[in-house]
Image 1 (cartoon, rainbow, N blue to C red):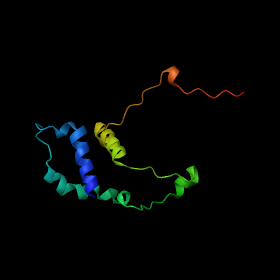
Image 2: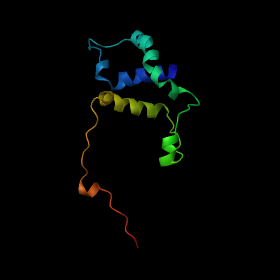
Image 3: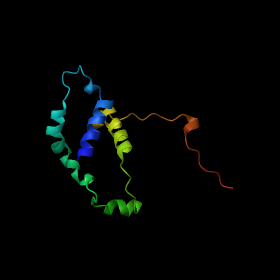
Length: 109
């Protein structure tokens, strides 16, 4: 859990405008220490070394899908995205692709 606490603090300090020293609502280290465990409780199954999830529906449609590796770099990238999009309150807009960016169907020989 210490790894997660350090990662959350690094992500907030690196990517959140609310972490600015002059922000009156800035949370200090003690706030993180007091609140991290309760706020992350909902994610506890994901932090186990051997998480168990019901994958019945997934396997029926997609077969066996390997779990991705969630290392520090991946978690920081996900944190940056979450902070940038206010944790889903403002989802990214879909930008239509230019014609040359669209995938063309493969030609048969």
